[in-house]
Image (cartoon, rainbow, N blue to C red; front, side):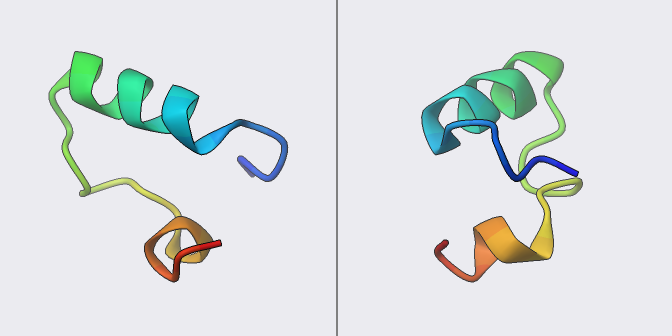
Length: 32
């Protein structure tokens, strides 16, 4: 789903929405 989005951008989007790590893809949590 978010394979092409930079990690920094992911963090910005998630923190801006206030979702934290609730909807972070498993791949991101694994450190990819």
